[in-house]
Picture 1 (tube, helix red, strand yellow):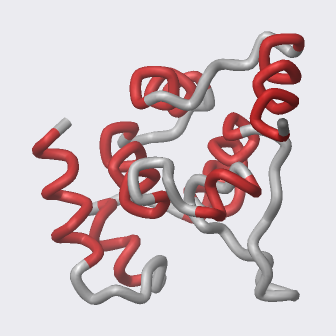
Picture 2 (cartoon, rainbow, N blue to C red):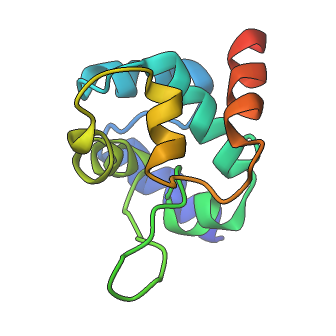
Length: 123
């Protein structure tokens, strides 16, 4: 029932379905730089859109509120893309983007960068 409601709301608001091509377009539409890398990050973070944080909170990057430590909740995945731009990428000032993500401690997994690169190769 809940999926029916979500799909109906999505259709009524003319919002795109969460697919790899639609997400890639949304990333570009929001002016996110390195769109293929960011797409790979979303795929990794959500385990190909299957994680509960993705499905229940529409959070594609497992972004957390630094004050509460809780995951941000969005009304649609498009809001998550915008949040990535305004909460993460705005800090980027140039250089190797993947190394920068590592430097800012974006992910806890020490193999995060290698996994993102592997996913990008498969896209």
